[in-house]
Each structure stands twice: as C-alpha cells, then as structure tokens.
Length: 147
Image 1 (tube, one colour):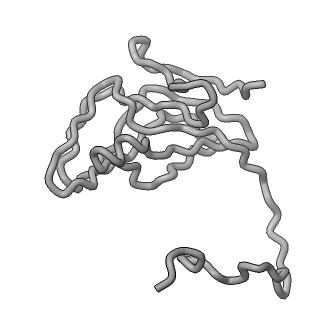
Image 2: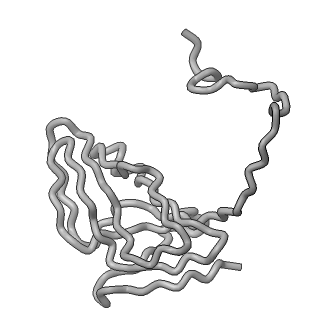
C-alpha cells in the first residue's frame, strides 16, 4: 500500500513529482524555472510544490545519476532533507561541477529525485562503552582499496 502524501501544486501547468518506472524508489523532481549554472556554480531551483510529509517520515532529495555522469550536475547538500513539519516550497540546490561547460536548466527538466523514507524518533542512551563488532572503529575507506 502506498503512503499518502498530500501535495500542493503552485502552478497548474507544472508536473508533480512522479516515478519514471514501475519499482523506482525515487520520484523525479522537475524545475519550474530556467536557470543557467556556470562552471562550478550553484543555484537554488524551484520545483513548484509543497508537501505534507507524515510524521515519522522524511524526504531525501538526491542527485540524478544521468545528470551527474553526463554533465557533472549534483545536489550540493546531498541528500537534502525535508522534515515532516516543513510546508514550504520544495527547492533543489544544484551545482555544476564541470570546470568549463555551463549547464542550462529549463522548466520541466528532471533535476533531482525525492525519496520518502521512514524516520523513526530515537532515544539516545548514554553507555560506558559500545558492543564489539567485526568492523569496530574501521571507517573512512577502511574496507576499500588497500594502499
């Protein structure tokens, strides 16, 4: 069963977020304005809607892999976080990581993806030490390519 998430569109001519394919995890977010991102520039791009994400859930705004691979376009604060209490317009902070080519965003272009994920409240419990695991304190590339 799908989670109902109320959406308010600000312009009836713009498209709401949608899944491109059956089984996709992310909803495509579309720009509602034209923006030119020069090399190594960033911009806040409007998507033309607001959501009422239910309590216990959050929205994660993530880059589109095709834009990243082909043009160096990413979401600066990836993943961007939309809290359940936020009711303002959804916007995406895009950045052009290409050092020489500008990138044009046009209204209707798919610029990022939105995942709605469970976000349970937690109680942090102070302890003297943590349980031992195989990984332990290894991180920051400790399981990657050896040097």
